[in-house]
Length: 97
Image: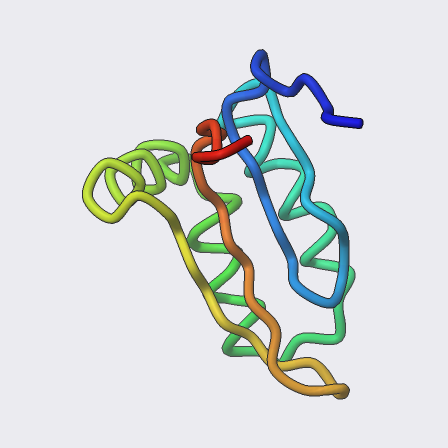
């Protein structure tokens, strides 16, 4: 049964941590993602990097520029169980869906 998520504009995936989450705006996605990420057992470098990308006053502008240029924001990070990926991208229909 397909989900109608067409009103949601941003998708955030934290592989191996949470299922994909859909958000109506980029600022909402960044705030919710930071709320989850800051609770993870990250090392100091990863925590600082995520805070810079997700929780600073110009974060939405920075991520918007990355999305326009690259189509998605992909950040890798390590947890005790191994490597993971934060992927943030626009909610676009998949071909063949």
